[in-house]
Length: 291
Image (cartoon, rainbow, N blue to C red; front, side):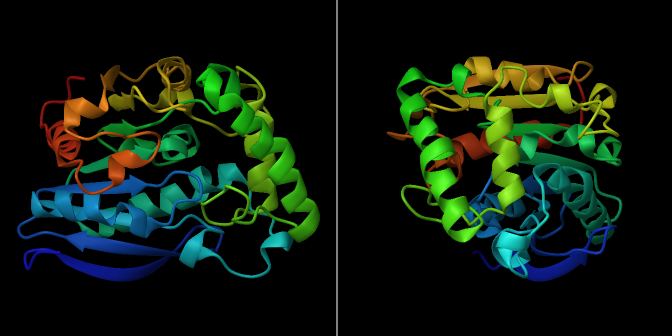
């Protein structure tokens, strides 16, 4: 971290009374606010190199842990009632409000990884976000992922996941799952959605109600990578289709485009990807809202 960038650990509360942990990374003379929403099972510290990069260029950046994840985890996870939609309906909403209070007067933008781009339509305050940068965001439906990845996903959903729920009552970091432990409802909902091409859309009038997917109009630019077996072109397009009224564009990159050998589903956030980060910064910092 350079002397021009500071990091402050914070706690903030959601409207349903859950305390979340976050980091405010602030550069000198900030001109923009950026919220970074994590992928499933990724702690906020994973995104710190990118957050510092953005702060050095003039941003106030908020990273945070969803409820039940990393430092926002509390209590016995096996008894947790946390479900995936809670991250969008409560946690992302509170994070936007916290960032707005911490960066008064600055335009609020959003950089989302994987599941972080799924729940804009559950946010009651989605209109406060000026634009979105999606990184490796795509539908979780296994049928639009790379064929070579399907055996691993079937093992994860029905082998490892089933065993872990029976043994510990939640998804534990074992047997190939290297992410944070997940609450049982989060895993079960994720697994259920992953089995259908329509993904979470059938829940719009039921489990996800009230929802605002058709009201999201902030531009979305989505970056996907040739060697990502999950956020493929088909899965990215399926997910962006959930936001029918938002201007959207898709950016396909190979590892060589940004000067690295591998990106995959999570490599975009590791050091050495500054060429990609600069593209994201250029998009987020544009004053012109044309997508």
